[in-house]
Amino acid sequence: MKPLNRQNVQANKYPERIIQFGEGNFLRAFVDWIVYNMNQKADFNSSVVVVQPIEKGMIDMLNEQDCLYHLNLQGLDKGKEVNSIEMIDVISRALNPYTQNDEFMKLAENPEMRFVISNTTEAGIAFDPSCKLTDAPASSYPGKLTQLLYHRFKTFNGAADKGLIIFPCELIFLNGKELKKCIEQYIELWNLGEEFKTWFETACGVYCTLVDRIVPGYPRATINEILDRIQIEDKMVVQAEIFHLWVIEAPQSIAKEFPADKAGLNVLFVPSEAPYHERKVTLLNGPHTVLSPVGYLSGLNTVRECCEDAVIGKFVKKVMFEELLETLNLPKAELEKFGNDVMERFCNPFVKHFVTSIMLNSFPKFKTRDLPGLKTYLERKGELPAGIVLGLAAIITYYKGGKRGEDTIVPNDDQAIIDLLANLWATGCTKTVAEGVLASEMIWGEDLNKVSGLTEKVIAYLNSIQEKGMLETVKAII
Image (cartoon, rainbow, N blue to C red):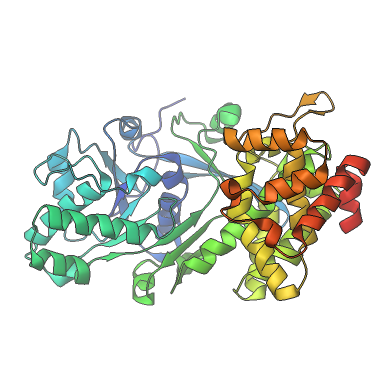
């Protein structure tokens, strides 16, 4: 097979208008695919210059292929299987600022440059006071970005129309606010002056975003089949689910410059990212956290098996649509659509998502993903949500350890939590177990025995699971 490069395939060239910090699988399967679609369907006419955010990375592999690669999307779309392959041609070149700092800084001199997009991991958005303006480059991502912005400010004499639109994609809540705060700290630390500070505040925009797409990455298991389909040697193939969502907290003037809607993409420009963050945590992560111990203790091993099972599938839908969905504040039709999309993602035939991997640190996950919904449901409906409470009882039971058939149950959490559960279960009394877990300030930061009716309901479910088994206990509530 021939190697993938611009001599061996036909690929488009576009003006460089986007600087992208990060060359990893997620950005290539998500942001660059979105840019590709906007170029194809909305005349966006933009290419991406990739900047490697740390000293060691994958840009050499990218450049060897002239920054071309294939994206394999897999999943269910309205019940129909999708397994597509597209060649993404939007990256023009990739730079390592640690060895090409002059080329990196020259990006600021391009008058057509308009966007900065990043995914430097959650640890990437951090202020490092040891960084200096004269470093080539600054070690932190916010430091590099501040150097770039300051050089642009000086190059164009503070022209208001030469500001940059900045979309961080790091998986932290209010990522835009965190990044902006770091840049402001560097402006102060490096004494860059009031004029630059005003230009940054008025000509540039740093916007909070929420990203959502599962990206397994390089498809080792199916690479030979993919290469057979594309008939060219590609070392940078990336695999992802078909679902995508990008929520950007920015005004409609920014949306007009980034015309994802014209390309039919699931990119939303909204006044506040917060309700969408809450929706994702509640309707995607919340059901995951409770279906996993319930499904596992019913003899199932993957998320897909749970959702397709005649009994556990009804339990998952009950938790999602009848309980957690009722606690959110977005329009119901919008929530139901998102819930149905989540169910298709859970049933993705191309992904084997083992429930035991989800059960890592189950108690902290329940606290952030399900406990707020439990309290809101009780407040709104005057009763406890049976499915969510059963999920909590299932977690407590799972942490008892023991056997499931031939498998040994080994909970994985903070050792203090493991020890607490072991000591409570050693009493042999489900009342003691329930009261002890719910009273643990170490887990919850409060005493959940004070939540009306919760202790009694957890005890009842623990007893039922011990006496009848998980599956029969689930049948009683659906």
